[in-house]
Length: 295
Image 1 (spheres, rainbow, N blue to C red):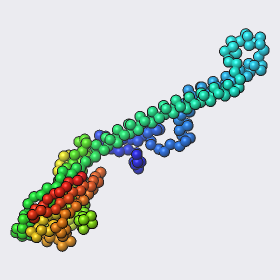
Image 2 (image 1 turned 180 degrees about the horizontal axis):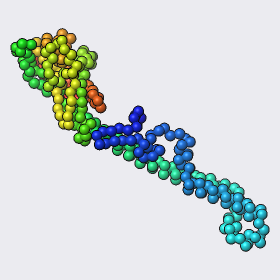
Image 3 (image 1 turned 135 degrees about the vertical axis):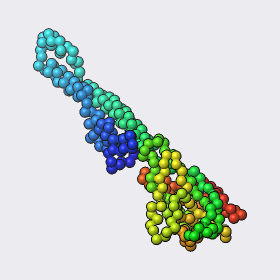
Image 4 (image 1 turned 45 degrees about the horizontal axis):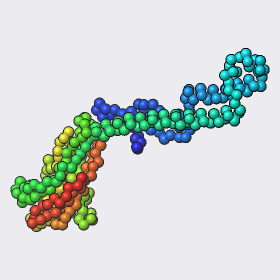
């Protein structure tokens, strides 16, 4: 489990404080001294240690300083065992071993409970985050027009569809300002990218003198879908990548992908979002074929 620079996370009405459950919930690295302290620094251990230390002293005082007559009159000396010193050493060592094993087990059980609680909280955090999933690549016929609105040609377009499907419908599960980065590969070699992706439902950047940065991001509501433009197949049988840079020329010279099988890697990034998806497309009889969908 990796550490995090913050001690508290808030997700709507869900919050996690790392120090909710006492000293062991801080997830700090344990030292040998802190472990022994947690195992042995207990009132019950102190009482047992005191008893083992005092009883040999009392037996020594009885045997050395009390006459047989006094030992016969006092009840406490009668209770004390007549053991040699080495017997007391063995008893002490055995007792120490039992104490260490027992309280080590109790400490481990307590730490397991803390880890389970933190694991549950982290699961809640994960379920409170946006969860973008790849719904597959689609091919649709699109009319490409110039600035004057005149039809240039109709081409089959490839679009990658994504959906936000979080584990729970918390306010923080909304994905905001998600941007797509697309890379294209042919025969295992990078031929273009990563380039900024264009969301199909975003405005067309017809005025090239203005910034297009505001068109790059898209918000995903709960179970909301968006499609990312990938490429189109022109009448000559070539694939061209498509994004906001494709306007107004349509066939951007640097976006020529050729006509071979193209492997596409789409990376979606945004606040609490960093997902990578892959799929492959090619052509057959001048038609686009999505040969594999891999998330």
